[in-house]
Length: 121
Image (cartoon, rainbow, N blue to C red):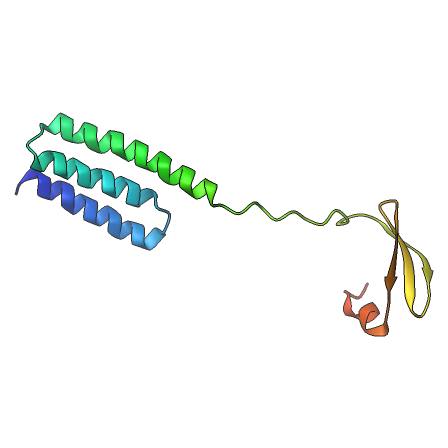
């Protein structure tokens, strides 16, 4: 079997494994290995084939990583009030005055809102 067929079979296996992972990293390496097969098909020596596959593998992996990081969503930020002490200053039938992290907040209240949160205990 010709050397270039070995490169292309290895490339097909890597691209097939990529379909199972979905990360684009194996796709980058698979494409680099395919270019190693192209170098073999063109008659390059074994060290040149490995150099083509290696250099392109590194370059395409870095490109895939940069592409992925450029499109990544930033991590969700928690609300500023999470974990802060809440002090109920007054409670009326229609609203409540609260102090959260040294801010005064007035919120409308109803029985359904008052009962929708977690029950202490």
